[in-house]
Length: 72
Image (cartoon, rainbow, N blue to C red; front, side):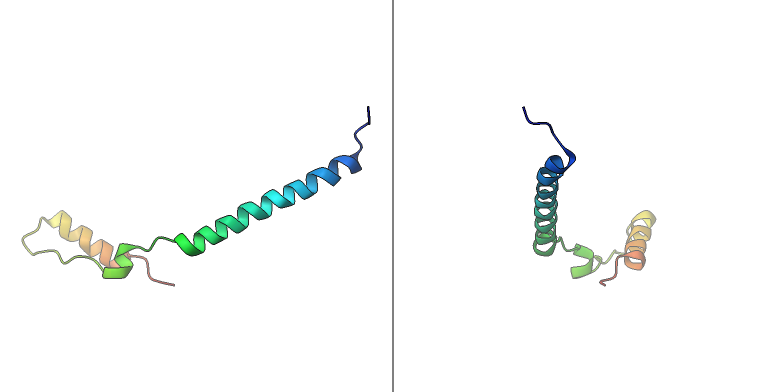
């Protein structure tokens, strides 16, 4: 039986690691580019809140308007 040397182990593990690493990251990048979800707030803006709505709902709408994410 052949003894495992550092060179024989690295000659197999480094290409395997690089293959898995690149495959994972390329797929992740492709998925991020093509399937990035768009925030509904960025598309249409917040819905108008009627004046007779409860105070908590008006405050929430004000918060969403003021602190929503801005497109970069």
